[in-house]
Image (spheres, one colour):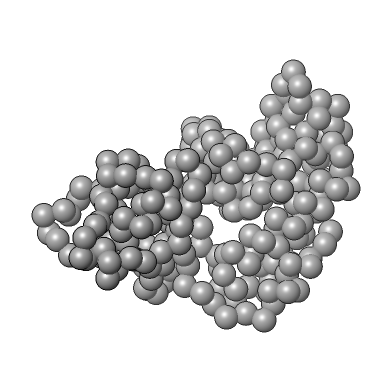
Length: 241
């Protein structure tokens, strides 16, 4: 099973939590590295990413005292409750009067049970890779016409990703512009030693138009994990609390 299947099943479960608990306005799950795994249908991607990165900074500072298991922020208009779930974190944005005991039951009983169920049917552990921020160089002309669906990045990045995925080659990536537009593309190493170490991603002109980016702008890029064939997709989509 790949991480997209896992994320879809988890997202479905978070939507169900919101349905049975009106005090939960939205919720999402992320890693200690600040990588968002899944969020319900009512939370914006940008909000999730900013919150995950902010929490990452707090969590790193608490490592010297054994880490951070739970964080409660009590604001004027509502609460933010963040709880550790082994190697993941659950964040819930709730109403001002939300029952803390009930939130704890969601964080420490319901969601961990869902995660254990999902993990029990995984053939291999999932890997969540933080996005890499790179500078765009637009490819145009003859070369771009023949590689219109392929971007180029440094070999060192591909090698590092391959090591994370136990030696499997990375053939596709997801690119996200800071406007929120995304594209999935094939990927290969830059074949120009003069460009090594410059933090570039070479993107064909057609894909730049889709992303609405141009040379010199920054984009986020992350690997699409090698696909694992699974017959569990439909069953996972139907997982309910």
